[in-house]
Image (cartoon, rainbow, N blue to C red; front, side, top):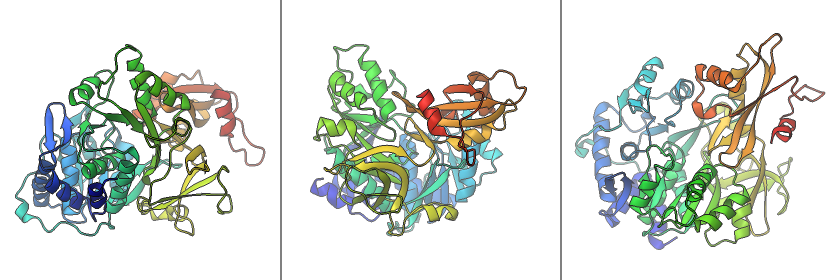
Length: 509
């Protein structure tokens, strides 16, 4: 990491990072979207005006503001405006619906709720009304505006909880993950250091800005002073025009994105898909080694993959100058400031090469969860985060993940609770029992498979009919099963008759 980036990474708050970067390179672009361009100076100045408008609406330091907005320049402005005030932000992925949004609003005790109006055919304002949300306002094209002179001084305490990010776990309801400005700055600093980028690069945000990757990536832009292209709706091949127009050098997101780029490259193997592209980078889902080799061989670019989670946005990352073997078969190494401990069932560290529970310690680690009842299973006695993942460290310090204790499915980088889907399937009159599992998928990382027993006397079950039922129950589209298997009896153990999911994974993988 260069000296300037290192100095900026030591900032106490996100707003301090913005002010310092804007003072250094006010005229350099930071966000690009279609034919629009926002500079670092404009990011600072316009965010302050939006902050003043929000302040006039009653938003104060400590106010909880939930926002469910797509990946747009306006969303970044609103988020940084809230950071300027010192409000508590609760970002929600735009394709969440009543079930998840209602839970997030209640759990965070939101004072305000910013929505995009009707977006991609769904009326978010009507949903907010159904949920009885407080302080609802639209923030799509038009943002609040005011005179920054009315604002109080910016926050100075970077260790106060000002972010609540939502992730699915082993329970039906999402978990609110508590972050500080410092933990987000640390995560972005780790990512920037690992990828070895420079001010001449052009990045890209093809993922939801409301994801934990939003601040992770944006901090990297602020530290190194380079721009990124924002995609409100990512779809291939339409998105290629944006990559080419802006000369993107670094793209990615997760395994699903690598597969989409490969699919497009294979349509015209002799022509480089994005002439300026030199690096694909991402994480959030398992990466088969063959994907790495195919990207390098067919696209002529490097691929670095990492390990992160909502609780810790950046844990490990492959470095562009690492060996092909490590880039293909590991999650990379932790950066300075991130300590990984692999322990056995008794909590004692195990040697390199031996699988165990993955535990983490460092400034990028979250402060816990919004629900205090989850605290007991969050950290161990030494203050290490209990991830629920299983893996080992190599002799060179690279991390290899081999499984998960948590019963979650990671599809296109998003966590899906198997229990949430199972609970809804049990409400179907034709389902006697159900188990939901994740199966390896080269494009999605994992696909959702529902294995069900018919209820006595029930008719035939089809994937289309089951999906329609789940949608009617309010399940988000991205969580719907892509595979349905109907069995006479689910495999169970002899003691508590617990369903043996590993047998299902073996059968249908």
